Image (cartoon, rainbow, N blue to C red):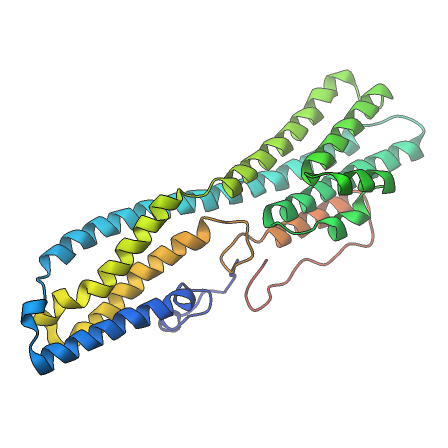
Length: 309
């Protein structure tokens, strides 16, 4: 995610890093090049019989704007739902850690303390494993420090590591109940938080595994491309030498809107405008380690070139 201080209006006009222009400039240059060629041939050879009026482009442009608006709204809904789910993950992780220290009690005290710490560290492992699961990367390095050896081996062998850790959290809850470290009336309170973790996991997987229908993406891509490439034939008779300038501006808008939708519909990646899952995960880790009194805590991630991953 790009994190910048408020940029001056004039400077923002020329801000290309993190904008859709980084991806779309070849398409914009192509459309502008076609417009320049059409303008040249019109001025030199008067190819008026091959040009069009602006009417069809006006009608198509209105429809295209509606299609792009609908698609980008759908893409942003996915982005915002992903952020909402990770916000819920922050809250649920903190609640589980708090409940582990406020509801689980008994003797011997040293064993209770060790159990609480193991439980909270397992929550941290779940958070890191979920991030890697969504990004398709290996979580082993980030979860090793938070799981006991035999539990780590079981998670490593699992085909679904977040689910394996969630199962271990459920086993911890059952163990605390069997040892009477947790009152029967409080068991549903902690179990409800584990269910919430499972719901968050399922919600994130739903976003990751259910993209916007491919046929809709292809249709938008084709219409935008054909519209921008043929637009000069509808403008050259009206505005003449200004045709390349107008085509540049319109293609920048349409290609840019298309690219924005493509990027934000997959919010769990590592592109500049994706959600900062590594930063959120580390913040949860820091919060929970502080709660259990761990003195050696990592520092929060700082933006690298104005980007949080």
